[in-house]
Length: 365
Ligand code: IPM
Ligand code: MG
Image 1 (cartoon, rainbow, N blue to C red):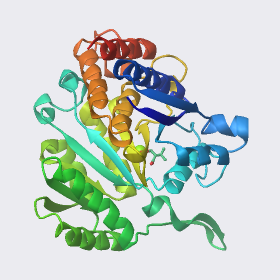
Image 2 (cartoon, protein in one colour):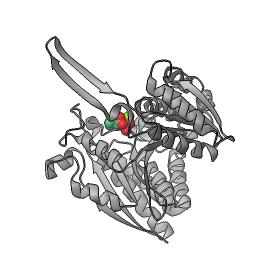
Image 3 (cartoon, rainbow, N blue to C red):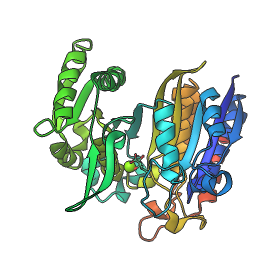
């Protein structure tokens, strides 16, 4: 019977709707296993700009430093402002990732058997796929300076900077080796070493760290080849480790193996240890989807699966985590579908109804 402190930030668009269902799943787990989850709800993103004047307040940042974990929905709308400006919704995510040192973004991709038909890919290609993308989250193009649009005598120009230190590469690669060691022991390190200096350093560090993990097979793959292999034969992957931007792009691609972006959870894990595990921020990989916000159409399963990762990684509650994952598998196997995963002829249910089904399944086991 544990007692845990969790910050909850629904954010913008469909964020609050799907997070509400994730919270209900968490409460059901608490009831079922006798755990106490103390939830601290805070504004983030545009919602926080409107109320507090910045996309994330200093008070909220300080709160996160004391929490066991952060449950996060989504931020942003349709705009594309500078994410380093305090009044841009995306600033909150960048600030949380950097200040909380959430360097390892773990994105598991495991298509549910009942949803193989929802993907645009063939069933035979998808059957048995179980891969984990480990994306570096606090370096590379997202944070490198300079990054700006400049006015020059000859017209406008723009610059972004990809930069990595050996230490940054080593800690993410090492983390990926650790995860691979507990799985099928195959690590694919993805880079663009035929073009980028960062990638050549990345390869060198990965080879060096490999010496500490002789039981794990390491292969290097160029990112363009990887994007092809991911849909040609996704079963050939176990753990994939890559830098920030490549990981962003490859995980949207990989999400299509599960049938919908609405099915993929992610864990952003930090350097800080909590009493129970590793501090982390947990969010669905889908964004705020403003076009369907407030209509009860969003798929809450990615957000709900996110709580399973939270229970496992930050709270050390493996059984509770498996219970949530089993509940999701069960409701999907029983034919429950939100619009994004409904095939023609199948009835789509609402965000809330999907949450109800998962809660019932958690409590009924
Ligand atoms: C993700 C998202 C973010 C990213 C955006 C919202 C800044 O696409 O988490 O994959 O690029 O990291
Ligand atoms: Mg992305």
